[in-house]
Image (cartoon, one colour):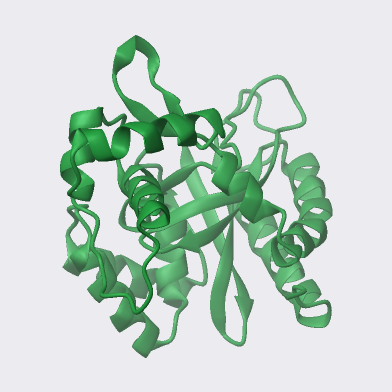
Length: 258
């Protein structure tokens, strides 16, 4: 994977170097060695050595266990979470999500799009000692996540076309025809009920958080069947959809601050 560069009017070589490294690692599926990074950003090892040290010292990078290479920390994510817009959304959503988790006895999380990925921006644990947690900052490719499908499904057609072009340009392989067909079905249903691609035995219950008839976030519940069962999957899905509508309504009258 190589970082794509555009011709810039003004240049700051040191900043360019650091941003190239961060963008490369943000798209990586795992740790990258200094050699991998050097090749990915098109610079020599000598050019990136000190930059890697500085980024590690500032907490943006960390060395993976076993000298496997460098990985991003969650520092950039935490900086983004400090924006008033994101803080306002989570302030509105978290009380609703907490009521949902208490009602159903399952965890839930709020997801936002981030280029060709989804990122979890808020999460509530299950009110018990058993459940699956998807932590804030977790990322997955849009094309390999239920939330990504729902986000795509509830976009206007011109935006969907832009997304498909972006997804086609990424290095993540997927069946575009299947993805689009699933999205159409989800749009008609108004929600998604799909087996998780990430964890066996988990069913993703996901509904869109809408503004102006398009999805800006999704509310998702990684549903695990419990014994004895407190609330069935159909009731849980209805509760997720109702909570997503409540968040949408609340954002309409208290929009994110910019």
